[in-house]
Amino acid sequence: MSPPALSALLLTKAVLAAAVLAGLGVRRRWRRCWSVTAYLASAVAFNAIAGLAPGQFFRWDFWLGAQIVQGLLVLVVAAELTLRIVRNLPGARPMARAALLAALLLGLAVMWTGPPPRSGLAAHIASTLTPRLDVARTVVFVCLLVVTRAYRVPLDPWHHAVVTGLALYSALAGVCGESLRVVGWSESDSLGSIVAAGYLLLLLYWNHAAWRTEPDVPEHVARRLWPWR
Image (cartoon, rainbow, N blue to C red; front, top):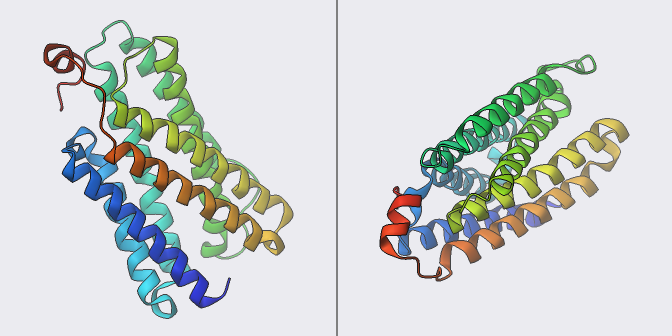
């Protein structure tokens, strides 16, 4: 990808992430999941910095740092959403805890097992640890989706958008990451374009969820189901 195209892509990501934050602020939904707000703020910062000065900041160390920070923030999002979703639903709590713990353990196993690393720390993180982190995120969010559907948990609309969007995007990124490890760096541009397109769709979906008018719910019901509002 040429430097101008790369800069435009990064700035587009920053603008879309900032628009989601603006929607959450205007609609007063930013407190429904603190870690998602932190994740979006990091997306704005990383993409804006790299987009405004790609020659200085779009380097291996900056890119890897951004990937690791945002990957870990997504796992924090999963943990926070699980606590918020099940804490007022005692029947779902034991199963949800067991599912999340199993997902986290499976995710850690995926991250720390596999073929021997390539020479060099940067190459090892890019070709091995980052794709495994994508797989770990996918496992966690798919489990969260399954538990909420199995127990018919009445999800807050913003929480539903976060869980669904991250599950689908993480699955796409995980598949592309594993494909990169298999086919090699010769297909990195094509796979990177697919992941970038998926991320833009995620941000567009979140913009719709952040700005839309939600259905009216009786106040006493909302306080019972979603006391963090």
